[in-house]
Image 1 (cartoon, rainbow, N blue to C red):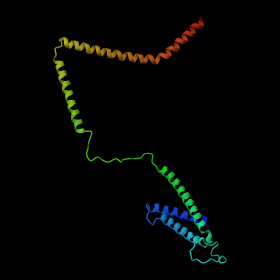
Image 2: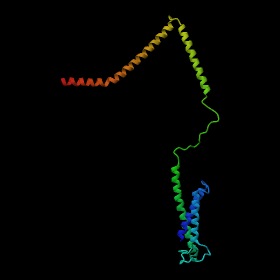
Image 3: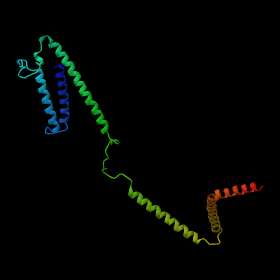
Image 4: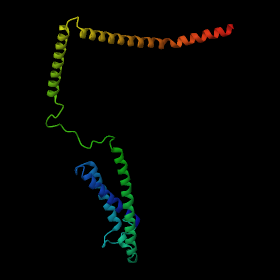
Length: 217
C-alpha cells in the first residue's frame, strides 16, 4: 500500500508539472489540458482512497467496500517508519519519472534543432547606402567621352602628318613589324597544335617502319 501510494503521488506530481507546461502553450479548453486535469483528479482520488481520513470508520470487507485498510488505520507503532518509507518511495518515483521526461525532452529538442540558425534576421535599410549608381554612371560616361575625344584627336593628328615624314614611316614600320610577329606567333601555335594532334600517328608509323627493317635484316 505504501509503494502504491508513493507511486500514485509521484505520478500526480509529474502530471502537475506537465499541466503547468501545457497551460503556458494551450488554453484551458484544450483537449490535452483537460486530459491532464482529469488524470490528476483521478490520481488524487486514488491517493485519498489509499490514505483515508483520520475519522474514517473501518470498511466492511464482506460488503466489498475496501480490500485493505487505509494507511491511516495502520498500527500506531509503524507510523514513523511508514512515513519515512513513503517519503523515500515518493522521491524515487518523482526522480525516475522526471528523469525519463527530461531525457525525452532532450531527444525531442535535438530533433527539432534546424540545420541553419538565423542569429540576426535581415532588415530592409532605411536609406540606400551603395553602390552610388549616379557616380558610376557619370564616371563611366565621362571616361568614355574622354577616350572618344582622345581617339578622334589622335586619329586626326595622325592623318594630318605628311606621308613622307620620318616619324610616321617609323611608326608604320614598327606597327607592321609587330603585326607580322603576332601573325607568325599565331601561325606557330596553330602548327604546333596540328603537329600535336598527328604526332602519335607518326610515332606508330616510325615504329612500324623500324620493325619492318629489323625483320628484313
